[in-house]
Amino acid sequence: MLEPRIGPLSPAELERSLQPSAAPGGNGGNLFATVVRNASLYDAWRPFVRRLNAASTLTLRQRELVVLRTAWICRSEYVWGQHVLVATTGGMAAEDIEAVRDGAGSERWSPLEAALVAVPDELRADARVSDPTWRTLAAELTEEQLLELLYLAGHYAMVSGVVNSAGVRREPGVPGLDETGPPK
Image 1 (spheres, rainbow, N blue to C red):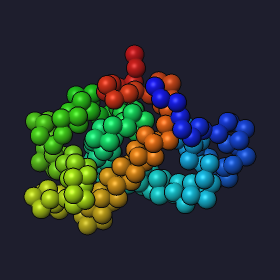
Image 2 (image 1 turned 90 degrees about the horizontal axis):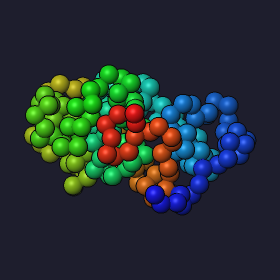
Image 3 (image 1 turned 60 degrees about the horizontal axis):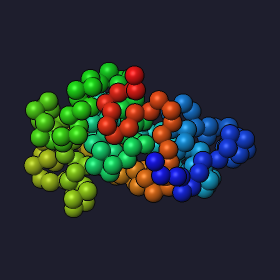
Image 4 (image 1 turned 60 degrees about the vertical axis):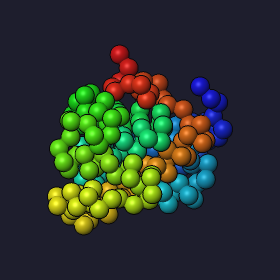
């Protein structure tokens, strides 16, 4: 495993750096402890993350299909592992998480789910969701959900780039890219 390029703050440094309302919470401790090194950027970013995850207009399953696929194609061990835990806690089957690796072509997906899984790949390819994928999404999602979906995929591609480049390490017990559930 590569050494972190930007290490997380120590617990004492982290406590001094965070405002009480911006405490990182349970998941993503190493990510938050690293990005808080730029406290003003962290303070601006954290409410956006909360909105995407805690106040989503998408179902947990819809959201995690997009986040997991984004993490997979970005080869982000950190984001993948954190969201495997979120997905499994939220009731997604290991077989569904495994199928995310295969992309939109997996036979496990409904047409809407296949379109959701296709979004990260299409955005990565040419920064645009294809017309067929968009039609499928638009037939079942509201405009509010469609916009959130685009922000969600883009955000987790950005976070994957940050954690991959900064060398943020997974916390103990967080699965890697080769795992679909918590380590046994």
